[in-house]
Length: 615
Image 1: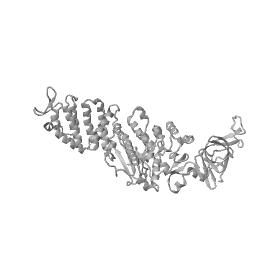
Image 2: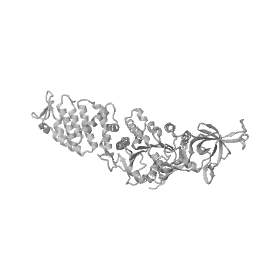
Image 3: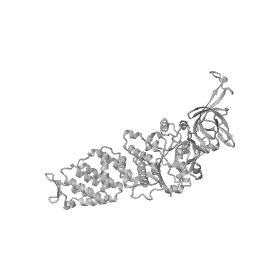
Image 4: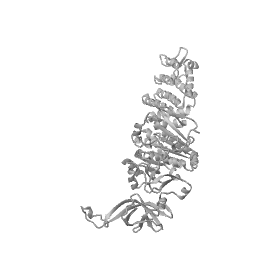
């Protein structure tokens, strides 16, 4: 039997709530027992209910005094609550049971009237907050801080914690950025560092440039790469494969294409481009063939079809003089032939002769199309193709140009941004390192919309394809800071197509990713703005101070492991303090996260230092 200080006895039991009559009125916050400093019986502290060989662990949820001698109201406080007239009563909520030296959540033992209540010993606290002895012996844990009340070191099991989806939430200045950095800094400092960097990949979406320091996460350039995405002054480019960028869903989102008219145009155009355009020769053959069809179908096509084709060619910076003969083709009075001269012409429904191709300048234009296309980037090549595709759909009046012209205004702007930040390669080997930080602080809105979705989908599909039906032998970890920026569910309800598609991607990742070894870490100051579907799939949480009722309500509805008392404490947490709860630990734990020497760039601005600093 463990000898410890007896505090009181159970006098009532109601489900998981027990009422304790205390033996004395002592209200010391800390007590010394057998050389250990133990926490006194105050709200939030653990106490132990002794029941034969079992120790039932419970937390204090309320305390009060009952006046036994005075039962009537009195205006004189001196007539009430005298030294011998009151009893101290506390209420406990059962958390679990220690049996055979191990703490577990179970209902096999319940408090009974007459059970004595004692201080929880240091050894019992270690069992509550601890992890399995195997994990400790094998160093399968990381330490991130100490419990707020007992100052007990809190260790998280690497396997149960990092092989899960993680949520880190808290208001501005609550310490959530430090917590995110601390988690992965400690992971990379573990004895598994070499294996982690060889068999896992970490992708960090950083909207505010907080994790871009050269020593962030305690890693050097050998293992980490920072992509500084800048749409004003181009810096680094993100490498993607052609099939991910030239995806109709991705580009529809980027161009903000309207579902009824513009999305079908994009889907059909990309299908033709991906299937039929592999080189400058195939591009030129396709577009010269389009002009031949326009000339041959002179009676059926729109009257401005030829001029639109010529303008598309000029938009590729082809010399204007090459188009003069085409611009001056003269129809006969029946409008069934177009003449360069009496001997050189093309008839309606006919095929242009070699002489016509030469005299009209089409052969020279074809050579220019080949040269311009081959010299262009992949993104420019698609832009060239779409210019002619617009001519194609309008020539036979299958699409009204009034519907797709606004799309092309957005396409030009979007392609200009893409050229600054994206490059396309067939093979990504050697491009990305074990840890990759995508710094979006200098990116415009179009790019901040696109990059997280593009990166997430590309790496998730890559991981899914690699694992497929086989055993998970490598993992990917996607870390999104300020996750509310891209996972806001409200836009879905107002018809925002880019949000709708992006949420669909992330909802699939968080629902299915775990089985393929793909894990999410979300960090946000506004959990209420994140899709409830996504939030409900998070397995482990670190919650810093939150005061907004909507945020607290969202947590209450989506976090089954967070009890009511813990929820009520969240608005009063100090900087760096958090409640840890989830599948990786047995009971919610209030911790003070240790600050790191290597810090994210999220410290508060000190105005007086700025104003007094000499230039």
